[in-house]
Amino acid sequence: MNGTSILLVIGGGIAAYKSLDLIRRARERGARVRAVMTAGAAHFVTPLSVATLCEEKVFSDLFDLKDETEIGHIRLSREADLIIIAPATANLLARMANGIADDLAATVLLAANKPILAAPAMNWKMWSHPATQRNLAQLRADGVHVVGPNEGAMACNERGIGRMAEPDEILAAAAMLLTAEQGQLLTGAHVLVTAGPTHEPIDPVRYIANRSSGKQGYAVAAAAARLGATVTLVTGPVGISAPAQVKVIRVETAQEMLAAVEAALPADIGVFAAAVADWRLAEHHGSKLKKAGSAGAPPLALTENPDILKTIASRPARRPALMIGFAAETENVVEFAKAKLAAKGCDWIVANDVSPGSGVMGGNNNEVHLVTAKGVESWPAMSKDGVAAELMRRAAAYLSEARDGRFGAMK
Image (cartoon, rainbow, N blue to C red; front, top):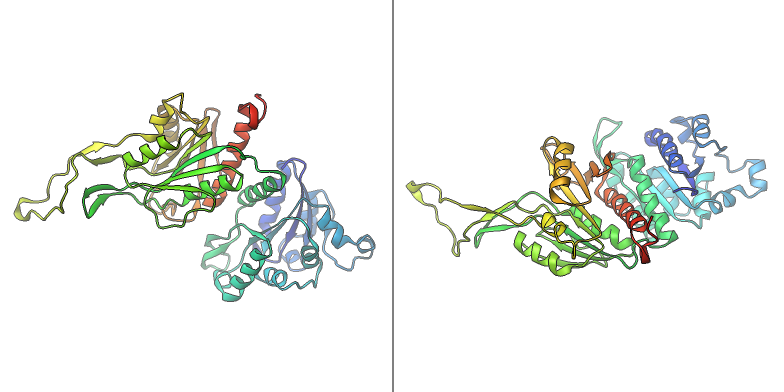
């Protein structure tokens, strides 16, 4: 985001306090930030605080004589590379959807010719209300991009979907939008992604499995496709729709997944997000097992499944230039991930906590640690889409620095 100009529109909600951190983090990344505040926003954060962090004047008055002699509401939107609305309140979304320009913020948004990223924040009932969802659908049809909201506790002592996305999550989405504006960084690359669980049959009606939803792997595949990559998604059984512009190969068992991965190579990036079952039955029963009565449960002898990540990493001729593994742990998350990085022979490990109560398995949010040879970087909690966007953006940067030819000169 170095050198990028961001216009931040701050709406009137309690989540406006997060806008201060958003400004700080955006400027740490090298962006210039100018702010427009609604009248309601000034009840939650002061213009002085915003101006101090931006090191810029704060704009709020549509009828400011000096600013409007220069057609300020047009100039503000034209001079930005990206407009971020955080928080985007239900009221502000409604005015945008209906083209109402009754204050400076709404007028700037109506006059904008640059990408707009909205970070909604409101009570969960307001978010789920048909009017809000109808306005949101209209805004998306108009080309407005949306990040969040997330699920969690709210200032009103209720819980649900409506919390504004975290600043780093918003900036990851912003970086993805700016990348799309500047060019697709993975054009010409092949990204191979594994996702979901594997099902290891016991008999024709029973199997061994795990609780993986596949959401994180599917989000990675979608993020890679948005960056212009050719994407192959090898997926175990899941209940979610395949991303657009992605080649999908459906498998059930770990052995089938390994075979599909090998057939899909070569690839420039391999992202192994699938939760592959560690074991399978040594002998698959061809007919349904019956209860044994007084004899007790039938013995189930297990054998180890192939380690897909380690197997592919150990083959230099076919190994992707960047191999990213995932480590889902219930304890000692970072320590186990470091050990996995060394044992598997991959380049990066994305580690997360899937202990009971974490909400990661099957949920829409994730909190990960990126483990590389350089160390550990802990990311803030964000949506799985946000994790995927940031991971693929970094993967593209890795290739541009490490590869010759279409990915840039060796550094």
